Length: 316
Length: 282
Ligand SMILES: [Zn+2]
Image (cartoon, rainbow over the protein chains, first blue to last red):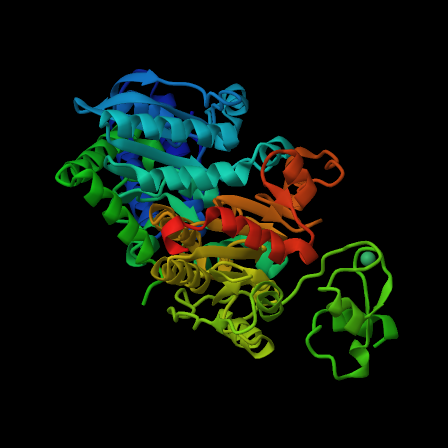
């Protein structure tokens, strides 16, 4: 079942027409219809290519939030092997908005941590739509510290609208948990690579993204506040989200230019959701490449590189 | 303009005492009409309900530091790096904020002593664009910590911010790890870091340096939290508990060491520094 975004309507219409023609063939093969299908399919692909070649920041935000976009659990399957999930913060509970555990990346042992949003109603509820509570961040801290202890590089996959805004999260110290998680990233004596694979939403994202190298998938977004949030606060209307997305510079391309990220991982034509396996392959290769470079640095140099990286942002 | 709204306006310009408008202010908590001079003499705390009013960085320096402190220069950063505009240009908002405030951005440091103990004190001023954290705040925080390390003394920060400065987009978010690099360096130097959470401290500021103090102090009644109350209410659609995200609530939930009345703040800091100061520095 395909799911089209609003701006993909012309593509959806072509695809529907192709599907209808295929159905009319009903096993037999009509040469004229075959030719028509080929023509329409080519047109659809060309349109997809041109649409995705010039997505606006707001359109990219929608692609980044696409319900079929691959998530943490998909990458565990397709980009890593031998995943051993590890649970709990040893303080309060198990928060499934952030998952983590041992994994192998092309054979290499890593600690893999990331947000999981869920794919259907039941799993979205289970994973709280990828919005972590303090226990999620405290689990991330525990896993990062263990990784440092046993010399495993840390890989994080960031995909959250933001940390959970709720009474119990505040009560249990959401702000402190995020601050400590960011601090734990900065303290790591092992290489850390973060990849924004969908939405990098504010403090809830940066808490597991203060890494040596930060990558973004081509159509992912990373921002201090959601475009909707910025629209309602700065423009005092919910109508200006598209303008806010543009003004805040939320795209991978913008962030590379601002030197906030280190690289962009290309997505398949039409976005990651059109070919999750290909996306996973490209992501794995990009992370592996960064880890290989970082493996040449000792613990002290890794900490220093990370510190200099963030100190430089905003310094003249 | 009604008499009452004149009084309300004067609340936002407590430092200008020379016009008759500013003779009286109304306590935003209990509604009591207070003689401005008396209110300020009482450290801008309402004598009737103990509401702690918001104060400027300059006033805060004077209340906490011994006489003879030095205000440190605010480091320069790239201005309006995203060339941002919403309903107004960010550069115009900055200009307006600078015209209305004595210091060039929302965080200012001063170096001095507290009852004889050396310290660098950073103060965020809510009057400057809601105290919001952009590159200038991040850079000032780092500079304040560096000064403390150079002087082998404590860094103390009075936080006040609605959160990150959205007009600087992702660059404001990046101040969270940036300031955390500084607190880690202060810790590595074995120097104390004390946080005084003042009204209001929310968002990315709370979720970074405001929660990383060796000792966490909050002013009575201060609003302190990660998520804004309206956002929480929109998400959970429940009534928020009484006193939610107030200093006393955070103390009850183990998030701060103590809630300290403004009149006791300086004494408390001196007492703490007496315990935290490195032996060799004495
Ligand atoms: Zn009062």
